[in-house]
Image (cartoon, rainbow, N blue to C red; front, top):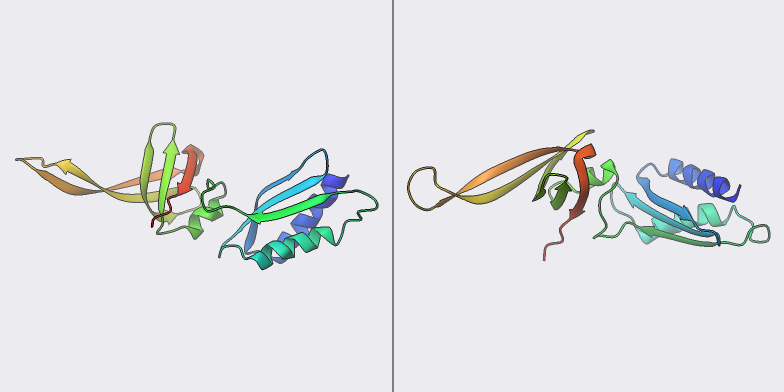
Length: 153
């Protein structure tokens, strides 16, 4: 009953803020609620406070003791929601499938696939030396084992 109430409150709060979306929600046996959110335009502290208040202010601690933690998806956390790809266009991703690992610039994110671009140095087809070749890969979300944004300094 407690989990259902929390889930309903969370869904209602996210319904009021269509720019935010849920990455993970867990409630352990001691009623510690942990919510991870992301947003199409990132997540501000105020966004976490909005979600926290929407839940906390509608639960009665006298009835059910709980703790609540609301946070944004970390910069190094793997991408798990299709909407996270769209907000990371033009950034470098490391994408692992069952067949390979590719690091490239996220050029496109559709409803079912992503497109990565990258450059490699390959031997010239004729003669000595190397030439820079542009590569492209279209990868279906269902084939992605893990994808992370590569932080460049």
